[in-house]
Length: 209
Image (cartoon, rainbow, N blue to C red; front, side):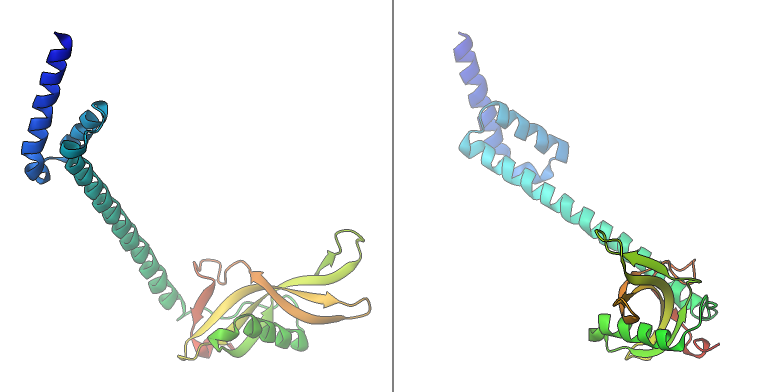
C-alpha cells in the first residue's frame, strides 16, 4: 500500500511539474529552487525535471552576470574618483626634495625607467634621488656587496602631452671596483604620499620648480 501511495504521489508531482513547466518563469527564485530540490530527492526524472534544472541554471547565470556588472560599476566608480583626485592634485604638487644630488645617477634613473617602459614611448624630464643614503645589497651566499639600492622620483611626459611623477626604487650594480649599470626594480611609496596611483599626474610646468 505504501508503495502504491508513493507511485501515486510521484505521478501527481510529475504531472504538476510538466503542466507548470511553461509557467516556471512566473515563479520566484526560491520556488524554482524548491522544485529543483524536490526533483533531486526523487532522482531527477528526465522529462519533468529538465526544465526546472534549466530554469534554475538560467537564473543563476543571470544572477552571476548582475553581480559582475555591479562589481564592474563599483570598480569604475572607484577608478573615476581616483582619476579625479589625481587631476586635481596635479595642479599643486611639485617634485620632492632631494636626499642626495648626483646628476649622472639621476640621468641613469631616467634611462632605466624609460627602458623598463619602452612601449609607452615616454620622454624623460627630471629625476630626484630621495634616499639620503644607499642600501648595500649583498650576495646571499658569499655576503659580498653586489649592488646598492636607492629610491627616487622621476618625472616623465607621455606622448599625449601629460606629465606624471612616479616613486621608484633602483639597484646599481657593483662590479667589485665601481658602481655601473642602474636598473629600475619596482615602484616605491607614492609621491605625494596622499596619491593613490603609481603614476601621479603633475603640471608639466611644476616639474622643474
